[in-house]
Length: 88
Image 1 (cartoon, helix red, strand yellow):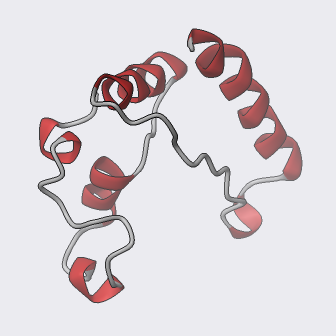
Image 2: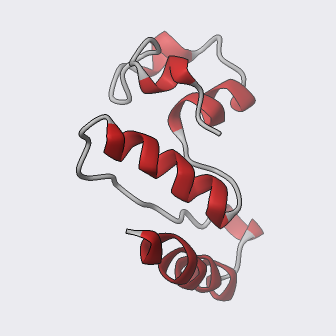
């Protein structure tokens, strides 16, 4: 579930320079800047943004180099459409 700290903007802005984030671990960045989890978790986090009046989000399914096939990415997009977007 998204942290209240992230939801209230007490972390660095998403478009701030990389230098401001150089001391954050990958886990911290993931918690503070990304929606990661099963469909229910992601939908819950999006709902929290919606309740704050945020009407748009940017969704990305990056390939992560050679670690994800196009088939895996397409499956993630289909899952997001079926199980997350369907809640809105």
